[in-house]
Length: 352
Image (cartoon, rainbow, N blue to C red; front, side, top):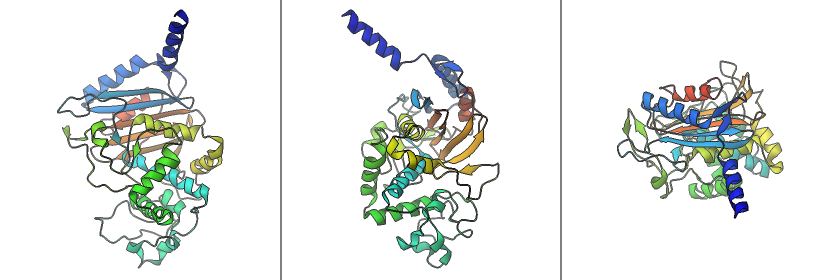
């Protein structure tokens, strides 16, 4: 009995640390971190937040703060699902790289040979667009067209400039669906089998699933709850991921500490694309994330904005440090809450 108690106590000590480390290596008490986040959320009137922290390539903290719905007061938990918004892009890009690894698609092959973009047929320059250009936002496609039936126009010769593009990711999705001979549901199934399950995540859904509403937070705009449903049931490679902060953190861990069979692929995925034009501010890009050199090393990061949901993450592969922030509010960035949490964890803020 004494031995059993000792094992239980030891296990508890191993799974519930009293402190975690900032990016600098300085310890921070978990209670102090939680008090800081709770206090600032109350002052800034942010309804809900989910936070995950990674130290030495392992998830050492997950915390849920606030409410799923300000009107009902239902509390958030670590199992609460959020819209990842544009944090959908890196995971989909990772799935694309898995297809590259299998030889299904090449990074530098013109994609029109697989699936011509019918909205660009009058512009022959679209025949130059490659997967690498779409992943690095250098295809010339706009972020979004005015409406789904509107014509697309290239803003520049593909591969010569940078322009952030959600349309580019949706084009890449359609190419994969053509090559894999599948629809939205089939693509979700393949992504789960090849990516989500392999990295150990439990809940990462691009397609709408009827199990989502019971777990999902309500978005909030101007302090008023909106909804916890999706307005379309499409697989949106650039925006429609529903997941938890912990599950997304597991994805980042898989990039920091890849299994041997995927090490070379991950190195290619995270390699700075020196041949690609860069934005202002000495910011570069990998095939999945914007990249910035900081005093702590190379930071891979991404932000997301679906209006009533906002998201942010960054990580340092060599340091093994990372952070994931999901909020069911339009205030995560405008209130400076994300900035304050990142700085509390010893890092500098840089928002894209």
